[in-house]
Length: 188
Figure 1 (cartoon, rainbow, N blue to C red):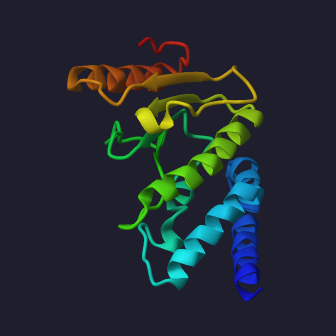
Figure 2 (figure 1 turned 90 degrees about the vertical axis):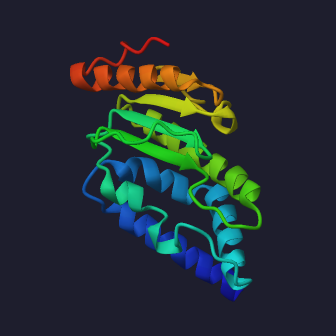
Figure 3 (figure 1 turned 120 degrees about the vertical axis):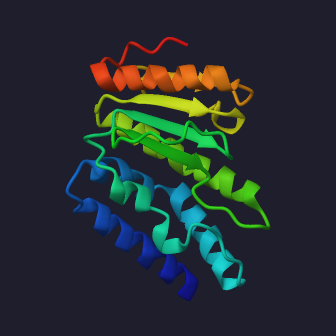
């Protein structure tokens, strides 16, 4: 019972924090934090801590990426698995989310499964908010993710076996979208 109260307390603190945040993350993050899959994830992470297993990033840093990025400024959301990333966009218009958000040396596959459910809720919440975004999914582990409630957003799926040249073309295309504010310009 104490563990459940601790989990509920932590979730409530996160909900309170992101309900009052200055930008539009409140409309997207709060539904994820309230979803049953997030509670399951929190139970898993708290269980790891209770067993003395550490994970990265640290518990207090998991949501740093949302603190650092204003969803109103973000135009492209890149969701990738493992080390497969587009890396190094020097703009606040691109948000890169690695699935899973956490990992440890014992069972990273469990992290991935639990985070994918939560991130799917986040994607749907962003789409439901009707804030126009381009989603780019990179890698095998995220190929089945994407909008489930609406097909009105641009979604692009990039295989994990993409060549360096093709990856550079993807980066170039994303930069063209950002420079011209044209969401229908991506063509892969």
